[in-house]
Amino acid sequence: MILAQIDALAEKYGVKADSENSKLLCVGGSHGPATVALPSLLVLFKRYHPSIELDFIVRNSPDMQDLVIASIVELAVITYPEPSALLEMEPFRTFELCFFVAAHHPLAKTKQITAETLAKFPLVTARPVKARSRTEEVLGGMTAKGLKLNMLLRCEWPDAVKTVVHQGGAVGLHYLDLVDQGVRDGLFKIIHVRGANLSAISYIVYSREKSLSRNAQDFLGLLRAARENNSVGRTILRNLQLFLVAFLPASFAFRDLTLAL
View 1 (tube, rainbow, N blue to C red):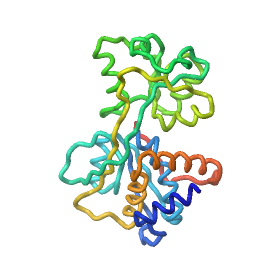
View 2 (view 1 turned 180 degrees about the vertical axis):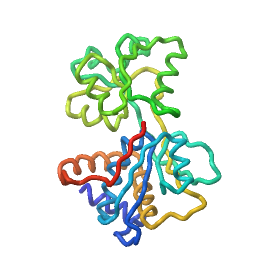
View 3 (view 1 turned 45 degrees about the vertical axis):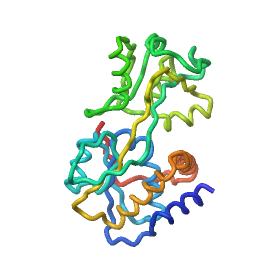
């Protein structure tokens, strides 16, 4: 069922089986998209292109734009793109942040709280990149109103946010897609903070001056397929992640995974 849905979308957007002479594709992402959506799509790409080697580079958005302009990365998904006459930019997906707590936390039975109530509890987030961060914008909007947040920890590795929240009394701020499985497993509870805007839009960027390789065109097709309907795309990606965890050989790895947070 999962793969049938993916196959239908891939056919619609012209994703072809492996036929490219080049055996390398370099794809990039800023921190949010690289954490949430791109890994699953890259593994899916390997299903259609098993002989292609993938480089997956993570940088902040301005640096990633420079890598695309320099043709080091063929295409990338980023947030907060800077206007550039050298780049094509397509909206990709809306990513949602969420506040969450462990299932045994005092706030776990509370559906909605105020920012003032949030400020009474220790807070843990992912460490922001050097450029703009939606996490920092959300927190900055609260402190600008005079709130003094109780910042416990900023974690360089995103999964550490969930670990800290699960172990103690902290409130986490993280990507909803990364927390959702833990919510369905009964480990976490989402809490809604009144007035908090937790959405961020990501964009596909690629060169306007240089044509994409066949491989890059196919990956762009997968990105557009995942974008077609955001709710359907999110469901397919979530199911694909579960499918891959269950069935992907443990020996599978990308040729290179570079993290620069």
